[in-house]
Length: 331
Image 1 (tube, one colour):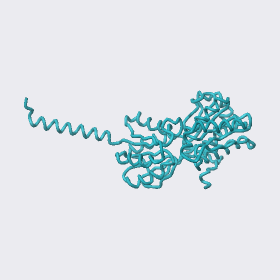
Image 2 (cartoon, one colour; image 1 turned 90 degrees about the vertical axis):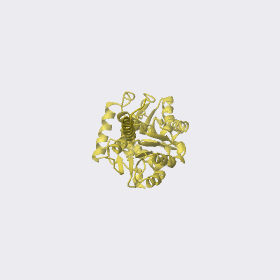
Image 3 (cartoon, helix red, strand yellow; image 1 turned 180 degrees about the vertical axis):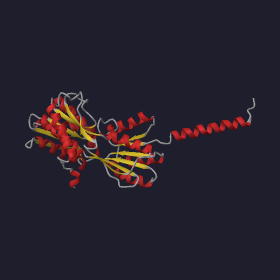
Image 4 (cartoon, one colour; image 1 turned 45 degrees about the vertical axis):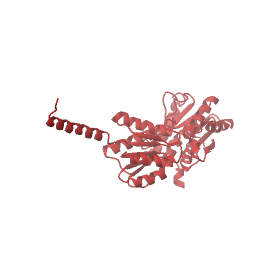
C-alpha cells in the first residue's frame, strides 16, 4: 500500500514535535557529587541524598549523581556533570572547593553550588552552616544528661570546620555546667577519617573509660562506631547532620541536625524555577539550618525541663542574647 506524501510529511511533523517535547522535558537534569563516605553514610552525605530524592519525588525529575571514593575523582566528576549539560551541579563537602573553582570557570553559563565551602565566583552558590550554634544546643543537652560531669567529642578529619563543631559543643556544655570536663579526639588528618567506624568506636571507648557518659560524634560514617560503642557500654551518644536517633533507640541522646537536605532541595528547586542566586547562604538556628532532634526514639531521654531549657537557649541565640563563638571566624 502506498502512503500519500502529505500523510508522510504530517507524520514527520508530529514526530519531530514529540521528539522536541521530550528533549525539552528532559532539559533540566540537575547533578550532585557526593563526597567520601558515600550517600548512605547515615550522616552528612545521606542528608544531601535525602534532599535530592525529595526534589525527584516532587517533580518527577531524575538527577545525575556520583559517589567519590578517592580525592582525585572530585574535579573529574564535577567536570563530567558539566559536560553532560546539567544546568546545576552541586558538590557535597569542603573538599570539592578546588575542583569546583576550576570547573565553574570552565563552564560560566552553568550554575554550581557547594556545601561547606565558599567558592567566590558569579555562577557559584556557597552553602555554609553555623554548626557551632547547633553544637551549642547539643552540648547543653549532653551536660544536662551527664551524671558523671564528664562528656566527650569525637571529630572526623582534623580541620577548622570540625573544630567549629567542637568549640560550640564545649561552650554549650559549659553554659550548663562551668566545671564539666570535656574530652576531645579527632579521628585523623586525611579524608579517610570520615569513614572509619572502627577507629571512632575505639576513641569513644577510651573516653568512656575516663568517665565520660555522653559522647558527641561529628565524624561522618566514623560516627557510627561512636554510636555503637555508646550502645555497647550503656552510655549515651549524640548524632550529627542527619537525625540519627533511630540508629540505636534509647542510647542516642539527640542529634545535631544540619539541614543539608533542605539546602539541596532548595538549590535544585530554585535552579529549576529561575530564582536561584549565586553568593553565600549561611544557615544557622534562626534560618532553621541547624538544631537538635526530639522524636519517639529519644523522647524518654530528654525531660520536659531539659527541652524547655534548650528551647529557651534556641530563642536566645536567635535574639542575639547568646553569642556562640565561631571557631572559623577566629582564624
